[in-house]
Image (tube, rainbow, N blue to C red):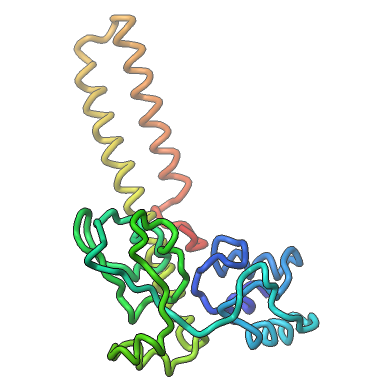
Length: 230
């Protein structure tokens, strides 16, 4: 049931439902923990589809989760951007490109309009703009995307979300491996001074750090969490 519900959700990963993404919300609906009326991107049509699947009665969208509106995308004022990368870190589907202290830009063809990049920006240079407005301003991508239903984009957004989760897990695993290698080198450097009580304490701390890193790697197997949650 969670899989079937997840397949009906828009996969914008906006968290407006109060959960950490579409999959957690789907699981909460399946378990009876959450209602079906907390997904603004899905809107009234999404609620109808969830009601038909779950056998629950259709209800209006819960206004505390937000309002249904025209599909939009993030737009960065590139002249004001300071390159802090906070928006990149917040984007759940890697739809923003940039580097530290360099101008960032939104990859419009991938943006789900989740709005998660707006709040972290320290200089308020990101705004959400309806696709029809961007299309009127001459954006070819916006013009094409405005003709595509959110439901038709959901597979693409889910794929990018899972790819990002896998990338982050891989980077964490690689970082821990580098730290473990450094710890092992430090342990070897302390070897000639073994027997000194102070050195033995340091060796014990380093060995404990190495074991913790091994345990974390063992928990995730190949470094990728099986639920794709990152």
